Every structure is written in structure tokens, then in C-alpha cells.
Length: 308
Image (cartoon, rainbow, N blue to C red):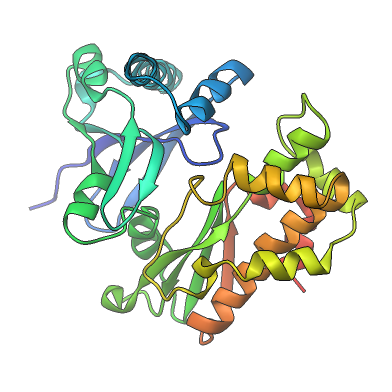
């Protein structure tokens, strides 16, 4: 008997705080997945600032209001996607929504905002949420989540690393397409979060280090880089995960004070590259290929240095 195809929508809003992505996917059985459509709802400056404010001291009122706002943004992006692809809500098997992480402190807690009930009420379909909290409850890190898809979609005949350059950088090691038991994943440290935060300090109004121009214009401060790489997180063995609690606005502000101007952006980029290269060499030296994804692929300085 042939399995009936299932349509699902997955939502993603990560530590880069650049927007909310939605993908319409058809599942034709285990490992048989087809991407049918994709849209992004960018966060504007005010929305990004609201999320960043929630990462620090705030009030229950503001958190509750942001929880509802993020749920509303999720409704917007799903509505746009379904209209674009001319799919009816009743044709969906599910919507998957993990929310927006505002605090991540494994192994005890991870917290996401975004009311999933708004999606359920608007579209009348099953909504799956709370992935990260469930993983932490089961003894996991709650992050990264992308390795589940990496193993299913990108396994090869040889050992492969799937590197995601989001706000944080994480990698998945897949030894072989038929060896999901040997696969594992972890965060290597900051991806784009520190680079872009310092870029905004150097040039207020910039959304991020556009085309890597500030990093390219600066010089790496080797003394500062060595100090940053001494952070205990980089010495931890996998599984491990991190977030803006450690590599966020405060971290970026300290580096900006120590190394002002484009040199700070260049040093932040070097931190991302050095921590990734070290992690691969230390924990997955048998990898024969690295496949890179995420917003960081559009940063020429990062990609050039990773390719060396």
C-alpha cells in the first residue's frame, strides 16, 4: 500500500533575528521530502529591537505581549505562503512552530516566545510546538534542531559535515547516509550574531555587516582573538549549545570597546571562523566534506576564510 502524501508547513526564526521563514513541504514517506514553496517575513528594526529587549531585564507584561505578537507574525507568514502556493489550510497535515528563543540555558531550561494557539485557531490544523523544551526535558540540549533534517536529507556515502551559519554556528556530522546512529550535532559558538551586532555599533542603522564590507576593511586583533578563544565554552565537549545569553549584545559591546571600528568586526569574524575550524579539527577530523548553509554564506570574508 502506498503511503498517502502529507503536506506540512515548518516555521523557523533563529538567533540571527532577521525574520521568520516558512516552508511548505510534501512528505511521501520516510526520507522522501519535496520543498514546494518558501517565504520569509523579515523583522523590521522595531521588531528586532523588541526581541532584543526581551533578552534582558524586562516585565511580564512586555513578554506576554511579545509572545502574542510573534504568534501573529507566524500567522502572517503562513497565510502568505499558502496564498503564494494556492494551498488551502484544510490540505495541511500540520504546522510546526518552535517559536523565538529568548533564553537558552541547557541543560535545565530553554524558553521560546510565540503563541502556537493563534496558528491552530486561524488555520484549523494540528500545530506542533515545544520541540526545544521537550528535548531539554529528555536530557538533551534543545539545540541545534536542524540535524534531524540534515541526517534525513544530506547523508552521503562518505563522512560529511553540515555547517549552519546562523546567529550561532552549528554543525551536524553524518558519517554515512545509512548511519543515523553515528550522527551528532552541536553549536560551535557564534556565527553571525556578534559580527552583525558590532557592525551595528560601528555604523548605527546597518542591519548587519552588508557584504562583509566592515570585516574586509578591518584587521584582526590577534591578542583580543586569543582572549576570546579562551572562553570555556570552546573547550566543552559535544553535545553543547549556546545562544545570545553568552554571545550576544553584551559580548559584542565588550569586544567593540576593546577593539573599536572595523577591526572589531574583523576580529568577530575571525572568532567565528577559528571556533568552527577548531571544532571540526577536534571533534570530526574524519569529515571529508563540509556543506555550508545559513545567512553567513552571504558574508564573503567568512566564506573565504573558511575555504582556506
